[in-house]
Structures are given as C-alpha cells and as structure tokens.
Image (cartoon, rainbow, N blue to C red; front, side, top):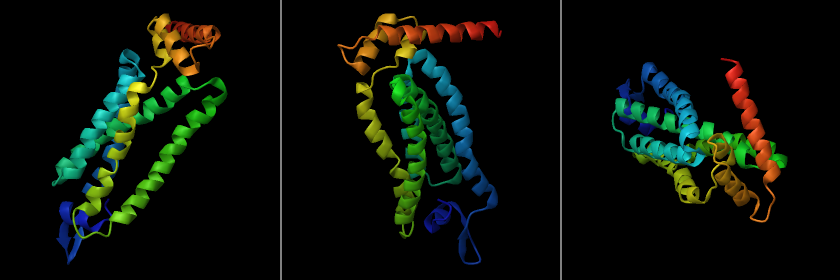
Length: 218
C-alpha cells in the first residue's frame, strides 16, 4: 500500500512537491499486522479448545470482516493502524486454525499434502495480492488502495457460507469426552457406512497420551 500514490496522499503529507509517508508510520503500518497475528494465534488456540474449530474460524472471520471494513473506510493514520491490528488478529486465527483443522480432518494418507497445501495457499494469496495492487494502484482516486483492501472480503464471502457444512473436528470432541459426537463427525468425513472404530480408538489413545504427557511435565 505504501507504494501507491493515493495512499500516501491520504495518509501522508507533501514534501517538495511529492506525497510522502514518514518512516515512523511506515514502520508502524508494516509491523502492526504481525503484532495482531501474534496475539490472534494465542486467542485462537484458547478459543478453539473451548468452543471447537468451526466456531473459532467463525470468530476469526468476524474479526477479519471488521478489520477489512476499517481499512477500507479509514481516513486517518490512527484509524488505519488500529484496523490493521484488528485484521492481524483475525489473520492469526486463519494461520492457527487452518493447518490445525486440516490436519485433524484429513485422512492419514493425505494429511501431509493437505497441511502443506494450506501453507501453499497462503503463499499464492500473497502473490495474488501483489497482482491486485498492481492492477488498481495507478488509479487517481482513493479506490487505488481501497479496492485491493476490499478484495480481502472475497475470502470471507467464500468461507462463511461453507462453514455450516464443515464437520467439527473429531479430535475436539474426543478431548471433550464426547465419543458419540466424535463418531458422527468421522462418519460425516468418511461416509455413513464406514467403520470408524479404529480411527476413533487411535484418536482417543493419542489424546490420552498427550494428556498424560502434559500432566507428567507439571
């Protein structure tokens, strides 16, 4: 965004006939998202263990939606900075719940590919974002930077309607001691006629071993 002239016009100042943004604000804009992601990851880990993976992703989508709204319609540096912080917290949810959820619901044979695919998708998204900025950046109005920011809503528009159809992680149910719900979730993933007893037993034993290891380290 800093490289877009209209962005510097709105959030910067004129120096020797050119629109510039001070180094302190450049550093703040570049780093605040990482700060938000740091805290978002911790919040997501705590929240997903108590409410489930789907509700955690839903909360992340809501936080991201608010952050994007603030970015698009901010007209002051402080408002834009705060919006980037909120968006960073939501992105922390994405980065935490994505690999976790993928690894828990993917079949064992596909788990490595699916988990690695989430990281590949993040890298592809970064490349696409640069392409979008390049396409809109030469406009002579505020939508030169607002339009690329607004395209982030595309991911919310795709994920939010699909979220009710996503099965909850059977690992979450096992950790909560709800074996019946875990079995239903596995049947939703593998098919109603599938024999999921072995998979459920494996999950249960892994969770028990994890609990025992955590208790012994205290």
